[in-house]
Image (cartoon, rainbow, N blue to C red; front, side, top):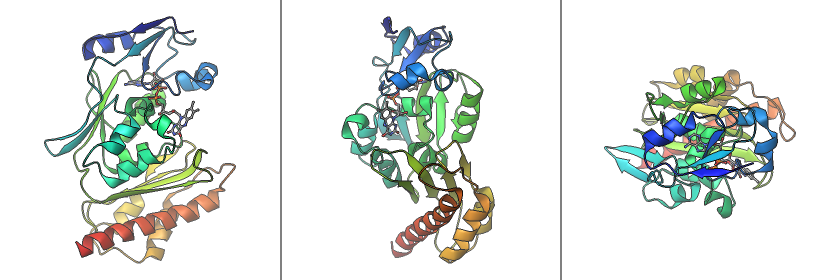
Length: 282
Ligand SMILES: Cc1cc2nc3c(=O)[nH]c(=O)nc-3n(C[C@H](O)[C@H](O)[C@H](O)COP(=O)(O)OP(=O)(O)OC[C@H]3O[C@@H](n4cnc5c(N)ncnc54)[C@H](O)[C@@H]3O)c2cc1C
């Protein structure tokens, strides 16, 4: 039962409250206030139920000015309290990020769900997290050095990470795109592929291919990336083969492992070719 809402005035004060037993940071509250959170002790553990029970005190970040989406010193910075709808509405946000938040098709949810909540909860079928990974985004947590997305997910898997303050991406204005597989607009997703690069034409440079099976794997396909690096982008069937060789997704009720692998290759090849085509013609 929630008995108290704490409203810290500084990030330092909030960070001290976060480590107190029986507290949880309140983002948009869509997951935290759901019956699922109350009954899902395992899912709640990393950031909430420090005392092993439903949190008693919620820490509201409303006074900390963390609801920003801005470019500063050529880096895109998104505060932990920025909502999905704010990201969609902010000028200059890369298309891939806009598509990632728009994948939450309910505007009602988009106006509530925050970036801090998305990272705090880390839903397995997040579209935003693979895009952050493709953009080499860094997660700033109060009192710690910024973490890459992979490092952040590993740290979170081990236990509470603390107060998420913001996410930043220095190369967010380069080519980047995302595609996801879902049966219905409000249903769970089965596959997310995000790609980015410094350059795709005439040669590939600093390409990133991130695949999520929406069941816990969010992987950079390093072997596929390495094979593409430094040469002209190959034909789609070659990219498809490279991606399928590097990705072994877990199946779910909507998509088998083979179907996810097949589509992962198709999505990655289509996205990379579309981005390369755009670059070639610009
Ligand atoms: C009915 C329903 C429908 C949903 N539909 C979707 C959907 O369509 N798409 C989707 O992506 N998700 C969906 N979700 C899941 C949920 O909304 C997401 O996981 C969302 O990311 C949670 O964001 P929030 O801001 O509401 O987080 P909250 O519920 O406020 O918090 C989620 C977790 O993150 C922690 N947290 C929040 N902010 C911070 C911070 N700054 N630092 C550290 N920890 C923090 C909280 O303590 C909590 O453990 C749905 C959930 C429900 C209940």
